[in-house]
Image: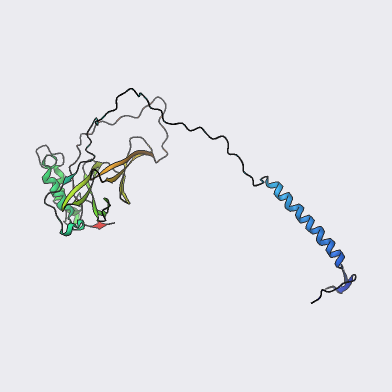
Length: 281
């Protein structure tokens, strides 16, 4: 349809009955041009007010990389450990088997009883530090208060070794508010303890194939975090990472004071222990 042609101003009635003159096409074009110029000016002012042209800006000087400096290079390198912490010790659990090497069919109480039999100096000897554990294990499986006194906690199952089969993680309560954490797997149809550690514990977690133990520190606001991982060369769970982390907001000690050192614990480390028969992932 051809555009309408206007030759001048026209008149139209207003809502109040008065007449209002409408601008013709020439005036409308002039008004639109002026409005466009005003909008462009406003946009330019807004962009200028942001103060950012969008270009690249420098972040300052890049610090120079500094490599590690070896101290006392003249000292001969040690070839043996000063102390044997037994971190890679493993132990076959005698007398405990399961059909098809299914570790979920292993009774944790049987594992603990085998541990007691294998370590009389810890549990049944005249100077055994954990003789009370033997009596407590006798309550496992009973109902009521006696059953709740069983020191063996619920067993958890997870593939820790990467062979596609479940392994078992056991927790056993020991005197002195300590928790023994053990891990077991089947190797060549034998049940083998591949991890053993005992400590005061804040929490124990399994993440993927790692066992993570958090323990309190004597430093206020700090905790120890130890990550145990399977090592295929040692065929054992090793403490792959052991670190101290700040977890609280305790104020730092005053200058000139030192944190008192705890007296050595007279409680020896418990021998291997069992776990409950319930399973949870």
